[in-house]
Image (cartoon, rainbow over all chains, first blue to last red; front, side, top):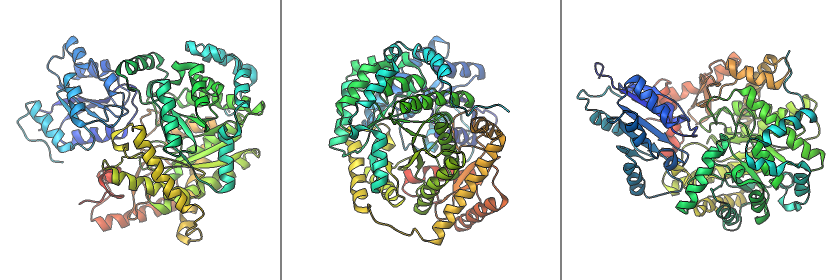
Amino acid sequence: MDKKRATIVLGVIGSDCHSVGNKILELYFAKRGFHVVNLGVMVPQDEFIDAAIETGARAILVSSLYGHGEIDCAGFRERCVERGLEKVVLYVGGNLVVGKTEPEIIVDKFRKMGYDRVFLPGCNLGEAAELLRQDLGITEPLDPE
Amino acid sequence: MVKANVKISRDEFFRVRGEVLATWPTGAAVASLDEGIRRQQALPAHKQFARAMSEARRKGQTLLQPRAGVALVEDHVRLLNYLATEGEADLLPTTIDAYTRQNRYDEAANGIKRSEEAGTSLLNGFPAVNHGLDACRRVVESVDKPVQVRHGTPDARLLAEITLSAGFSSYEGGGISYNIPYTKRVPLAKSIRDWQYVDRLVGLYGEAGVTINREPFGPLTGTLVPPCISHAVGIIEGLLALEQGVRSLTLGYGQTGNMMQDVAAMISLRELADDYFRRDGHEDFELTTVFHQWMGGFPEDESKAFAVISLGAAVAVLSRADKVIVKTPHEAMGIPTKEANARGLRATRQMVNMLTGQKMGDDSAALRREVDMIKAEVRCLLEKTRELGGGDWAVGAAAAFESGVLDVPFAPSIYNRGRLLPVRDDEGFVRIYQPGNAPFTPEILAYHAARLAERSRTEGRSLSFQMVTDDIYAISKGKLIGRPM
């Protein structure tokens, strides 16, 4: 998808310093042809939004691994709208809550917060990239893995 | 040459102390160091962490300790008592939440409020600074085991003042191990200085006859960290702590999963640390060790998770660890319930009890070769660090990270080069794939390269970052080495 490389913003939200998966996501999405702006760990909501505005990104991929996801991710969709990113595609993934919880409950909770898709541990990166391609309306196939 | 590894003077300490205690309102309650010392002196012997560690070492036991912490005081007390009774834990933790670790006490306050409203903890640990002295005393006084503060805090000065004053008798962390893997942009010179303060505080308790145990955090990023890197960091932090007056030191190491490498790592850690401490003129210290069960990604299937936990438990005993930090079958999903936490402890207990006293393969030539190899690698890293600091370990450590002499794989800090890459060899040993600027001798690099070439041949593919990624996820996907299907 060379000609229409879509820009996506990536980062780990809040006070979370889990850095390993973030580095792997960056390499993976870049390999599949996305233009990745990786903000790394410990990223406040507004820093995601600043980066999306500056780079014209069409999607923000939020990670949270340490359990504070429920607090850190709340109000993000509203903040995006407030700052003019009405149409930005918003994904969230990771270990999103404290305590082992039924997947449906977690997905429902974060969907209600305004996240377009919610990814839990063990999700398949290939499927996530394909969903992102569809959600961004990209017609060309992704670059090979 | 600058000198940074120097004992902080009393005047300087108490000047800084005033500033530290003023950073959050709960600091005022611990203004009297003497009151804290009296509370520590009043601790019964069986609740003193340093004593428990030294007895374990003398008796050849491996003590069990979980990680655990929730937002609210009464829930936290219930959790710890459950882990002591139902989990048969020997030592208790108080794991601190991630907002407190970044000194974001206002966000921790919000987390406490939200947790009270939700009727469950929304924080991943116990916000000890916000709760303050009386609540921390309640924790220590409500349990019948030694309690340690476990966290990941680059500036842990106020947390130390409050928790040590309350009677916590061990404190995890260090200026490198709680910076490089735990935060993004705190300069090493600052975190090292702030941890010298913590060590000096422990030293002041020591001057009053109270021995508080200190434990540098061994596993670092917990992701394929070669033993030589975590050993080098642990030994430097040990040297910095001893300089400030710490006497009871527990050095740690995180399981890689190859049994021989893990046993060799524990043997070499003990021998090297003892050697380096004595060479720097330290005689009056008690060195113990802690083995961390696998710190990387876990299988979601709880039966498979128990196998990972049990392997760690077995290696902890066979490597003569004085303490093992125990994982839970919920690890893949994040923070465990208290029941899952206790199940991890009980699986570990069974394995530890069955293996205690058994010995295996200590005289094997292959094991000795790995021990010698790790020692040679650590000496490369530490001698260069010493040289960069002109003999000063604090100056040297900062310079070593800046130049990439010390380089922790996959760490989030911008002060870490991140050019060194590890990968497993054909038997699952974690080896150096790309050394970055780490100053290993050509012989050491050739040894690693030769072992990695064996894996390349077996798998019919060349070394690549893909192989590294495959290794990172291998255990969570059911095997040790990330071989292609």
